Length: 358
Image 1 (cartoon, helix red, strand yellow):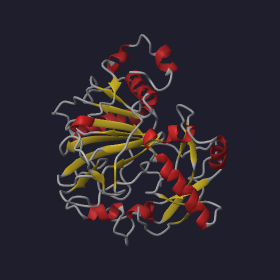
Image 2: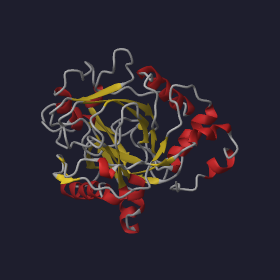
Image 3: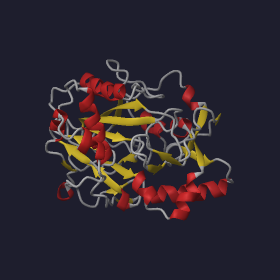
Image 4: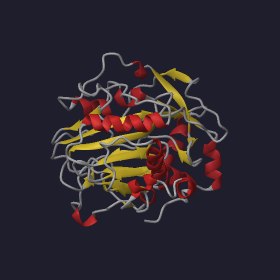
């Protein structure tokens, strides 16, 4: 597998480390094109899905997530994520893996960064593991939770670093895949003029846009189509929106990425509504271009970890005839930083915008 970037820290500091056993068998994402159903349409866009970023992501077939890892091993996993553009697929997980193993692994990743797991701000977690968001899509439900592009928890003051998703009950292979876009590659491909325009722009992100009442096309509507996803009684996150840079800098790699999404972003600060809409629409369409995107097909006992600071993702709403259950744990990161080292989400808040369609 050709790594996407040099990974100098891995090749020097960890070159002779026992932790490198975790990388044995590392390979590019398996893309089972021939096994995927043909002609299935993404019901959100009305189009067939196209991807062209075959180098994005890596599979690690020899990492047993039930184990306790050393600090060095956790750094190896995080460096492998950096090298793969932010997507690691842990295949071949033992069927005995439980939700408690899932949480324990997430806690080890969080502890390495001196942070914690971030329970979902709106949805109740599992009774036996409150940190876990169980995402249920019932058979024939036509509103899908997270079906448009987004970065997890971008409406928080301190946004998600990593999310770790486990396939619990998955449809046949190639259906309801997760799509990923490298927002770092997307930024790099912009003209210098557009890069400079976006660098100093900031936009508001809103939980209420996706989870507020009043619209049939948001994640709240998807939750209401299930019998198991429940809202918390107290949801203060719906009351205020936070300001984030349109271009954020990754704290580990220094790479810049586009940080605005049709799911959570409401408007660009300091622009007229028409101007803001035009710039945001360009960014959304740019991020979704096939050359920046890949997709992960699901198997039971598969776990995917992605870096929200490098990527956006969406759940593909194609064939919705089978039930799908996945379980997610997200890790609290830091307040996003722009190219000048400035952060806004801790100090800039406004009353929440109304709920909106994706």
